[in-house]
Image (cartoon, rainbow, N blue to C red; front, side, top):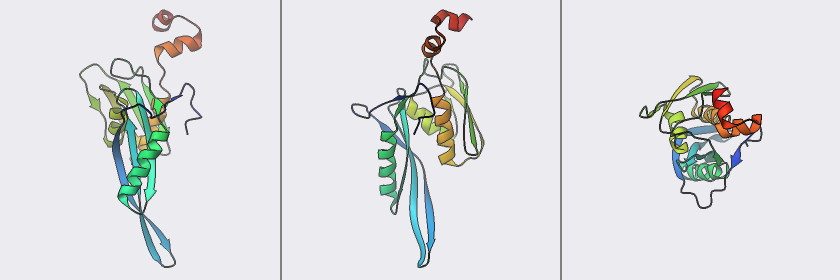
Length: 174
């Protein structure tokens, strides 16, 4: 699912204490010759609140089944996100469909300044201080995926130094 991103560390769910957050449930309708067939679509974010997070989508005729399928899907898509002192290492923008998300690191004590879908993802990651802005589409599915797009592009200072082949001091001081 995340093959387009470099430096993505996939994580196995075994041994992790994961908490799931329901982002949204939508009722969907399929019109057939015999009438309307109703179903449900659920999007869930799971994370250990320590840098590991995953998102999943579940569909079923029943809400509970859709949520449980979404949780299982999310556990299959776990990735590690670099954090720096309870916030993000740097500013990052993400995009998916019509949704655009901007994430900014914040000073300690700021809290999570974010709307519904973005907040669920950031809380699951374990970020404590961050500023965010959602622009464009407010569709929860696209906002979650745009937030993941931004998070998966984050790089720690150590990673940047390693990629550039320079010392950590040179990354910060130029």
